[in-house]
Length: 80
Image 1: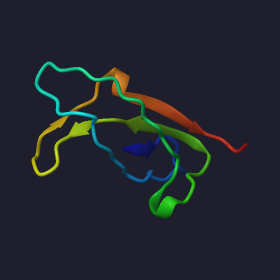
Image 2: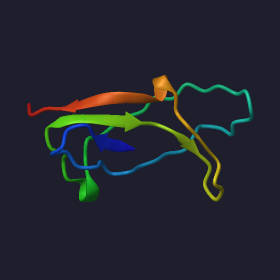
Image 3: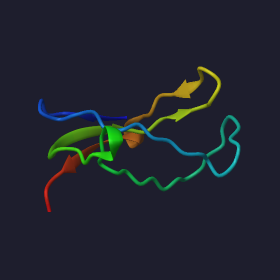
Image 4: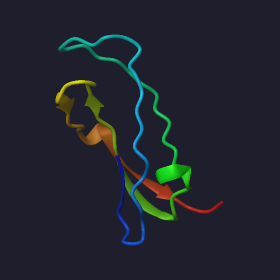
């Protein structure tokens, strides 16, 4: 989830991926994540501040885990 912190911002495009292996309760896995600042139809997000939240879900179920401080961060989009 990428949501704007500034009033003129727009919501970022949703995306996902797959883990390298099945996870069982108590398992840990380190994952590298690439965040691309785009909205719907892959249009670049306008300059501003955004809150990025990473979460795990399981397809086909309503199971989800809420991210803690390590899974939420601020993204600043600026022109180059």
